[in-house]
Amino acid sequence: MPYFSTRSHECVTASQAILKGLSNSGGLYCPVLFPQLDNDFIKKLCSMNYLERAAEILFLLLDDYEKSEIIDIVNQAYNESKFDDSRIAPLKELNAQTYMLELHHGPTAAFKDMALQVLPHLLKYATNKNKEDRSIEILVATSGDTGKAALEGFKNIEGIGCTVFYPEDGVSDIQKLQMVTSEGRNVRVIGIYGNFDDTQTGVKNIFNNVDLNKRLNEKGYILSSANSINLGRLLPQVVYYISAYADLLNMEKIKLGDKINFVVPTGNFGNILAAYYAKKMGLPIKKLICASNANNILT
Image (cartoon, rainbow, N blue to C red):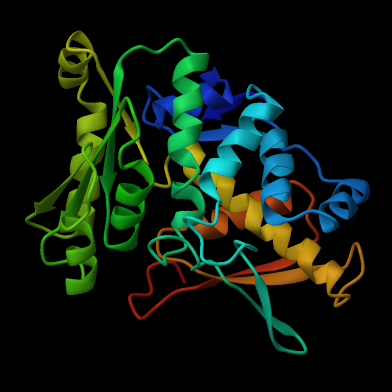
């Protein structure tokens, strides 16, 4: 299944999109066509655990990866040494009509772990598939949670370095301490004078700097991203929306085909975009409700 750039007609494979992060034109990679979930597929998921569901769903979206590769990636990402609940993303009932999808059981207690434990392994396989022998340097702009989750996901991954940039006065003390005390021989953290927009713009400018990238290439390096602009960040998040629907079926709270709503706390739209992808794949979703805070950026 090819992926196209939102700013050009460039089409690439899934592994190429994950390896590059952004297209040459600066656009995001999106599916040309969304694979469709039929009732039999959703029913099959009901008898599976989260790791098995993740493998089945990601295989639909990453068709230049072998099934065995995706199973290996999922097993490395979602294991008991990293997640404190074997269900990975359990669904809890709050009342008769409201359920909470718990996404805080990963190593940093941020929902970003759900994708950032997967992305490093997707990247490793992508380098092999595309015969990429340069070292990968991951650049991450963060306003808090993404930074620590990226550092934790990429630490000590062979052939990949990770540099996190954060606004010096734009994260909480806890978030800053989480980042600057991170361990790992291949990770580093840099504070920026300015706000998160300044930080993110600076990172994007690095990606778009042709001369800099040429010099890095000559020295055997390639840049990629672990922010939500990278397809490898977004697609693992699609999994837990589909998994939540299967859990509701198992709990006999809905019938197959019933439509449900998702209320998604959203700061940068990546999380709710993953829900939209699930809807485009045919998951019976009625409404996607974007919940924002007092900053009122998206609502």
